[in-house]
Image (spheres, rainbow, N blue to C red):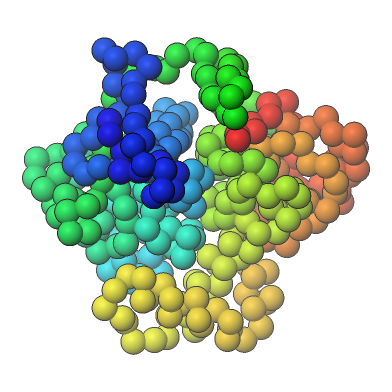
Amino acid sequence: MDLRYGMNPHQTAATAVPIEPERRPLRMVHGQPSYINVLDAAGAWQLVREAAAALGRPVAASFKHVSPAGAATAGPVDAVMAHTYRLDPGRTGALTSAYVRARDADPKSSYGDFVAVSEPVDAELADLLRRVVSDGIVAPGFEPGVVATLAAKKGGRFLVVEADPAYEPPAVETRDVYGLRLTQPRDAAPLTRALLADPRLPAGAVDDLLLGLVVVRYTQSNSVAYVRDGMALGIGAGQQSRVDCTRLAGAKASTWWLRRHPSCQAFEAAAKVQDRVAAQLRRVGAIPDPAGWLRDLDGVAFVSDGALPFPDNVEEAVRHGVRYIAEPGDSIRSTAVLEACERLGVTHVRTGVRLFRH
């Protein structure tokens, strides 16, 4: 696969070559990707494939700069999503609902995203993608006529990538960095409901925590995810401080909830999706008593890719409606973290599995 360029346009003559020539994990159906496009397609596809297998329903992800801006299972499209994306909630298909729920978590960050879906793309999703700003899509297949619709986006530069759902990567992965070759076993630790076997957790919280585990596995570390009703409402990626990551992701989750305030819908509908999103975000700053509205955000699950080092992560998470936390545990202050959870009414689950990604 000849790439347009590498990480940056001045890094020309970049290529992507299958490790095993007879087995191609990704196939370009339309367009010429860049180096980062390939990284986004590969990471996003792994996320939706793994999450769909773990949860048993369609999953979509919205990727930007090798981390998900959003990820969600198929599910209900609420009134705000329907208004923003001009959909009929009662007639929206499963795959389209999964992507709308993934993109709507942080639509500002999803501007110009790389889309991934766990099922073949249908005409309904293709029609929605015509109306949003996006760079490409990776999926396990495409229904008749869909590729032509997608290929017309961006003046013919929209990327269409087909993933082989049967492909299994090698057990060992290698990376060349500054003249050094790093080799390690691929991170294949199973992420299942067994990691979350705690009778205090409702079934919905288990599913949300499981989705969060898969999300942080494919997010640049440090990473956390706030998840509610099968939607990652806030994803924090690549922060050196975990509590900063928790604050940033929490602010995204709270913004998602504030966009549900009635005053954020009281504007004349703009023609384009992103204009409607921008109008909602402008209204967020003018909501009367936003703290009062935020008190109704509840039942949120929180997942951390690494051990929570201090109770301040728990205290910050609770400010954004968190009632369930899953993390590896075993930090030197885990006792203090557990005490904070008990004090604040949070159900804590120790997974024992760290999910760093760099």
